[in-house]
Length: 240
Image 1 (cartoon, rainbow, N blue to C red):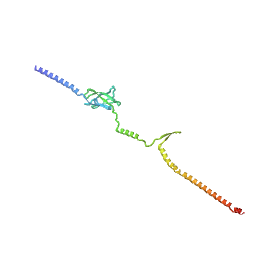
Image 2: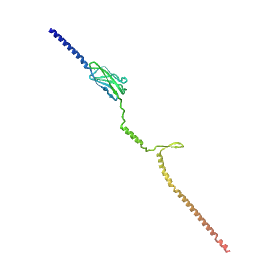
Image 3: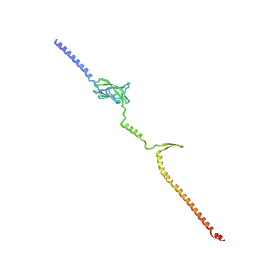
C-alpha cells in the first residue's frame, strides 16, 4: 500500500513538474520577442520638412524576412520609395522625393530575432518649411535706395523743344556751355560800340576843317583879285 501511494505521489509530482516546464518553455519565447525602441520621426512628432526615410530601431537585430513598412498620407497615398532595408537592429524605409506637408501614418511588420513576426504603427506630421524672414540688410538697402532716389540728380536731363521741324532734344548743360562760349564775343562787341562815335567825330572834324580851309582859300583869292583891279590902270584913269 505504501509503495502504491509513493508511486502515485511521484507520478503526480512528475506531471506537475512537466507542466511547469512546459508553461515556462511557452512563456520563454513570448518574452524574447523584439520590441520597437524608437522611430525617426518619433510617434506624434511634428517636423518642418518631409524626412528622406523612416527609421525603426528595435531591441535586437531583426531577421531579413519580408520586412514591410507602409507610409500613407491623409488621403491614403503610400509615399514609401522601394523596399525597406534591414541594417541590424534598424529598419530603414526611404520616402518619395515629392512627399509634402501633411499628416502621415506609418504601419510596419518585421520578424524578430526569435522568428516571431511583430508589427505596430505610429503617426507624425510635416508642417512645411517656414517662410524666410526679410534680412535686416535688405531693409537698410531699401531705405538707402529710397533716400538716394529722393536726392535730386546733379546732371540736368534733356528737354524737348517744339519747332517747325519737330521735337528737338536739348540739354540745359550744353546751352549753358554755349552761352559761356558766346559771352566773350558779346563782350567784345559791346567794347566796340564806343569806337563808332569816335570815328563819326573824326570824320565830322575833318569835314569841318576842310570847309574852313576852302573858305579861307577863297577869301585869299578874292582879295588878290581886288588888289589887281585897283592897280596902275585905275591910277591912269584918275589922272586923265
